[in-house]
Amino acid sequence: MALNDYLRDEILEEADLGYISQEEKDRQLATFDGAKGGDRPEIYRTPVMSAQGSAAKNPLSAPDTDPKVVTTRVTANGYQSDVFAYLAKPTEGAALPGVVVLHENKGLTPHIEDVTRRLAREGFVAIAPDLLSRRGGTSQFSSPIDATSALKTIRGYELDEDLNAVISLLACDANVDPEKIGVIGFCFGGGVAWRLVTKDPRIKAAVPFYGVNPPIKYVPEITASVLAIYGELDDRINSGIDEITAAMELSNKTFEKIIYPGARHAFHNDTNPDRYHPEAARQAWQQALAWLRRWLN
Image (tube, rainbow, N blue to C red; front, side, top):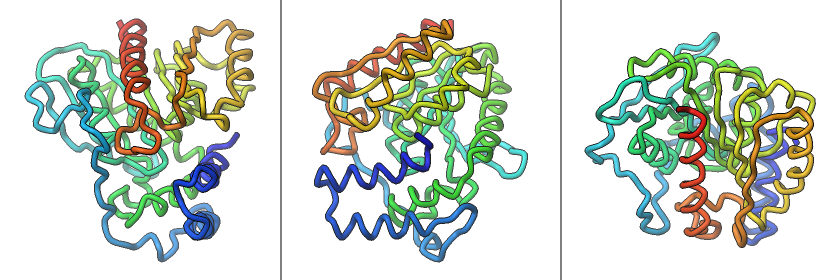
């Protein structure tokens, strides 16, 4: 499944599950389908998108006042476009592993920034790129669906260029060991994480959460150790599990998968009360940390 198809299917799934009305589905599809590659329709030139609050008090959350974490907003200089990013570091440490955090289809939200701080609190230097930087950044969009529609206009090779710039920035950070770079991604970002490991050998470990498969023909190019995380009730994404498992095994890749019972797509996101599964999210987070530590040591 192509990433653009994934973005459109997200709208259809939310309507099927009753999260949005038929009218809202039609509006979102009209907006999404009207976003052609590279164009920036007038609907995008709208006020800043409001922040997403947590749907439940999550004990794993790392507030931006956490004394163990230092954060800053940085810019990676890309080939054709600069990439905005959110960087979080432990207050102490050198030669630390670095992790790229890839956001969902709503852009770089406060939730993803929280996840980035959580990683820093655990001893990683974490960077979350705003994959909407070529369209002015997530803050330029008045609603999540406008951000989703804008993502469709960013081509695959542009994503590759932006991620290359961000990884290069992370690898050059004074606190990072450039031989210990990993990636974690959620939903759309999970698919981007899969894509990234087929293209950049600097990535040593990857944890895609419910991400769409990369083109299977590129699986032999993967050098990273991959832990794929899924929710049992995520039929759309789970339809690709057997294919990617067989391809990884055929190519003798380091690969494990975990399917969490009773969990839906996006179950890790505590700002989404319809999908958040606290126990599965807690367990998956601990498994992700263990995987990154294991392969980035």
